[in-house]
Amino acid sequence: MEKSTYISRLYQKYLDNACNLQELQELLQHFEQTAPDPVLSGMIRNELEGLDERYAALPQVRTILSRLDESISTNVMRPKIKRMPLFSGNVLKYWSAAALFLIFSIALYYSNEHLNIFGRYASEYKNDVAPGKDQAYLTLANGKKILLTDSLEGTVAAESGLLISKTAKGQLRYQIARGASGDGYNTISTPRGGHYEVLLADGTLVYLNAASSLRFPVNFAQAAERRVTLDGEGYFEVAHRDAQPFYVQSGKQLLRVLGTHFNLNAYADEAAVKTTLLQGSVSINYPDGKQAVLKPGQQSHIVEGQIRVDQVDAASAIDWQRGEMNLKDEDFQSTMRKIARWYDVEVVFDETAPADLTLGGLVSRDKNLIAVLKVMELTGKVHFKVEGRRVTVMR
Image 1 (tube, helix red, strand yellow):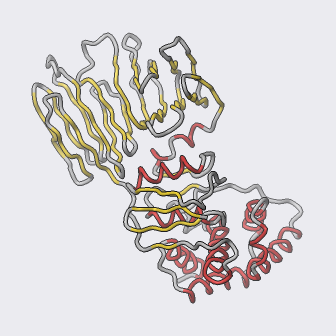
Image 2 (cartoon, helix red, strand yellow):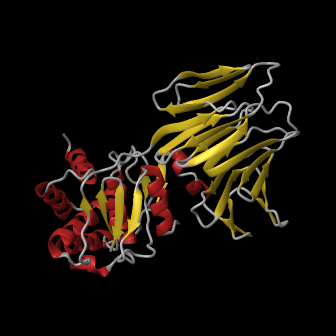
Image 3 (spheres, helix red, strand yellow):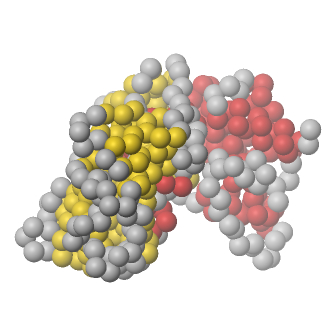
């Protein structure tokens, strides 16, 4: 086995909370003895700017920093660094980004277990928690409730000319027979720790995040407009129909589109309702007459009836739909609520827990809970205790 592959596997083992002290020391020795390449050197040096100076007190880190200084000083032209999502499928092949976090993961391990310089609390993991999965409940117009799981495939329901099926790709698909009425409304709801994808009868594709629900007409054919209601978060790819606009109601906000791609975050426990446009055009309407029209790359925030529009990285709003969890550009409290919904855990803040925290990184939503928490712990300003499905946040 190649050495780089072996070290990468050791790093993954560390993330899975299965690394012993000897293996941790072996990882650290690899970085103390191996000259980093210029790309890795530049990446680590950039990330070190603004990092807590207490890390410099660790002898292992001082050694690495010294070698980085030597490496960078020998390169007149610093290469342009392409940042990669952490812990994605390609990270074992291109593991230089993971190497940065390896250094500080180990530094944090030593500080927590031996030096105790980051406070009186250390992380405690009594168990791990698996990530969410394809799971939802479908409530038909007649009141019948059907559990949808990742193992279900084939016909889900068939009545009055309506065929509801689950495809091999995990998508719930609605089909209306020609001439059939297909009256009434259906509701698809995802629990905490679940997500689902549904293709409506008009061809509109909707991805539902955890703890969300979508109420929609079974058949849009005879209606002057297409109107659905969303609670929680959903990503929409609306089928274009000039004569039949599409509306999404979320609380007091009414969103109107003709055909577009957008993400709508309307969780009841979030301070703002956020609509992010990726393609097309949408208008945001509020009962008191306030209105905003979004262009691609813009995001609206509605807080207590006030609408604000910002230019954003629209792709970051649909990280969850791509199977990722973006820790950057989110306030700490909101990030913990996001984790609570996806892993179906209770989050409790100790009196020492930071009120806010600047985070970074992109973590796969397929990772277990502890791997995500360890990334946040790399700041040195927060620690966690996991007991059953209860996560305690502490300094």
